[in-house]
Length: 363
Image (cartoon, rainbow, N blue to C red):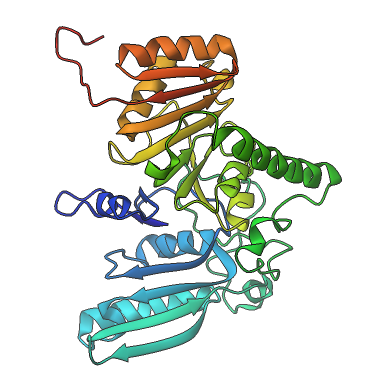
């Protein structure tokens, strides 16, 4: 997944999304990124303007948090190869910081043809290195803060202990999609819930979604699952030429580590707030029983307006809910001049029009 801050000169994430690349607006600043611990197999940053060693190295420690044990960080920037005093001072700070994180240098090279330097680091697979350091700085985090708590959480100045499954690298794609995820609880109930979720979405997508709901799937290039669970909906769409952004609401069960273990992507989010993306970004929004708990905390109209902002004109909304909630949504969406159909008294399919209200008709 590509992420970058909103920039007034180059709308990088907008360009990425229009090219069909999964992307979201985000910035490494003072708060954690909205991803779980040990999520990414590889992190790449070219021409980074992030001061990794700032504030005691907290920005780089945030990358360490979301990088899978044994995962790689590829960094291409002037401190890697330039010899002027400023760049060399940055490089020396980077060397000291990565050694304190127990990262090892896998490769460091310079390409004459493009005049670009590159260094590749690898995160350890065991916490033993943390204990064997001469100076325990940064310290290992205690267990007072729960793992994966990244919603409005400040950057840490410590190293999270590596999980017991750290040395278990996920299976190759696409096998990892259906294998037992390393982060899934070993309890029989958890395994059955995961397998049941996979079977449920495989059947529902093939038997209902792809043929019976009047959705032109050939026009869909990207999808957002607003309440992703274990990622079963995304897994069921894997053979279609599209990608899925899996969103795990912060007030629901935390299943995002499982989604990443499966080789899928996603973020945490609170749907009572706006989502970090540009307007008219997604072709299809999907929601399965999201509203029944969400509307106890915020107004359905606000959520509908946010969906209207995110969805491209001509895009689809697919909602599975009770008829009570569907009827409320139908009224709101029709006021926005959407076309709306209800199927089997549980599925709402809305299609956004190109119409925009003027001052006289605005609700």
